[in-house]
Image 1: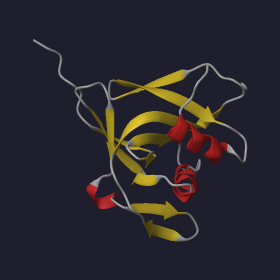
Image 2 (image 1 turned 180 degrees about the vertical axis):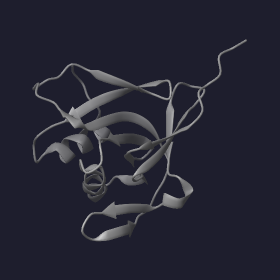
Image 3 (image 1 turned 180 degrees about the horizontal axis):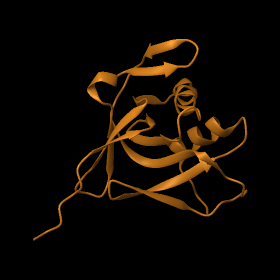
Image 4 (image 1 turned 90 degrees about the vertical axis):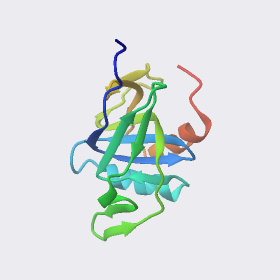
Length: 145
């Protein structure tokens, strides 16, 4: 009997996409997931989900990201309120954690496993250019290492 694909999970996270290329934003409460998502949206990203992301493995080894129905098209802007935004599902191509800081100039590749799917993982970079770096990654890709 063939192994079945794990079912969807509902994770505390935020997610944005550049086209169908998605970035899952991980971190504990108050680390800035929504703020980073808003910054990336100001640079051309589309909201996938804020606060909760439904992550569903597909049969091709990918991880589909969607918003729970009650949160579709909504994002929290701390100090302003809940905002409406265009929203669309996407496939998780990268994940970034705001709980760990990258200290290497050219870091080794990291991964995380979510719902049985391995996703490339980045750590937060302490630089004002961090959102621009993520935007460039999502639209152009990473060459090395």
